[in-house]
Amino acid sequence: MFNETSITLLMQIPLAGVVVFVVVVFLKHLEKADNRNQKFICDQQESNNTVLEKLANEIKEVGEKISGLNTAMISHDVKTETLLGMGRVQAKRQKENDATR
Image (cartoon, rainbow, N blue to C red; front, side, top):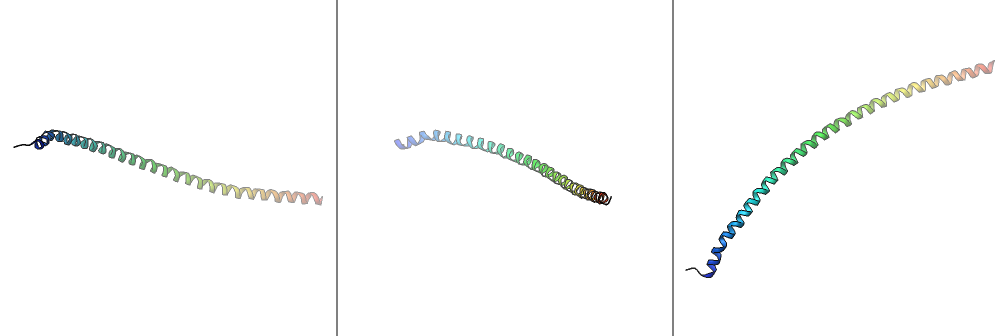
């Protein structure tokens, strides 16, 4: 009824079952690890987005401060030039007065 090849094949069925079982367990482990990694990556991405948003706000604030400093420096330069010009005029008048005496 059964020849030697059939018996050998029937003896390998439990071994094949064990291999299938090990593969199923390994695939479940990979699925769990993949879910953990996916959650970690999502958390990292949210964290990075929050940090980048804060950094963008800081850069915007620094830009506004620099703009304010630029305006203040221009105003200062105008006042300085005005005062220096007035000083030059006064010095010139003083020279002229000294020369006429």
